[in-house]
Length: 222
Image 1 (cartoon, one colour):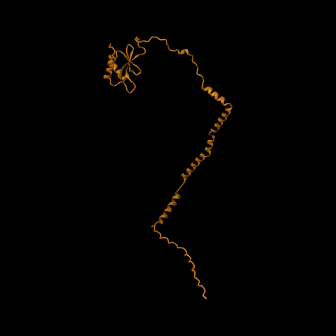
Image 2 (cartoon, helix red, strand yellow; image 1 turned 180 degrees about the vertical axis):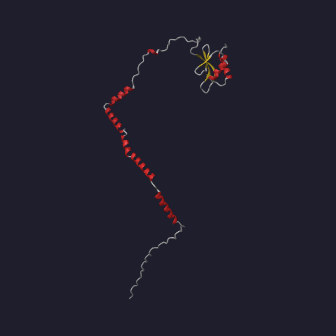
Image 3 (cartoon, helix red, strand yellow; image 1 turned 30 degrees about the vertical axis):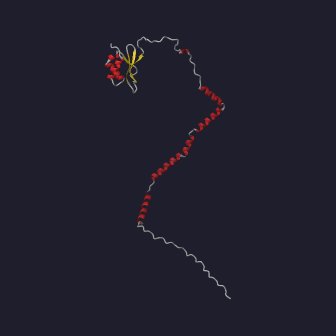
């Protein structure tokens, strides 16, 4: 079997499969299996290659994003891969993970219930006042008053409106039409050319009284 060469695989994908995606990767593995060295495609999108020795290579960058491109980056070993000796394995240290089962589960203290109980206790005898207020609100929220007002105002008006509509439907305007036609004939009979009236004569009114004439008196002579 041909040894796996990630650089050769990347060059092949870029040269023959310009459209990047899981479908193109699966097609390349079918058409050119030697480049994959017997590995299988894994991952939620089928964008990773797991080799027989357990190594895993990510072959598509940003598989679900707008910047998708081919790559060949080793990302580690997946579950179920054969054991591979790690030349850089860490030695066991003095710290170990905490065993959470050793800690007893402490129920959370109640918060809301004491607040409500304290508030009710502070009210004291005002509970009766609250009950009376609730009864008053319930009494005034009854729709009986509204129904009574509707029965005294809106409902009779609706009935009266229907009766007036029926009366209008039954009205006969023929007598009004005959009278209007007669008036039109009378107006046409008096029609003629309009002459301008003569200018109005201004009444001077009664003559003004003349003032009395004073005759001078001569003095007496001896």
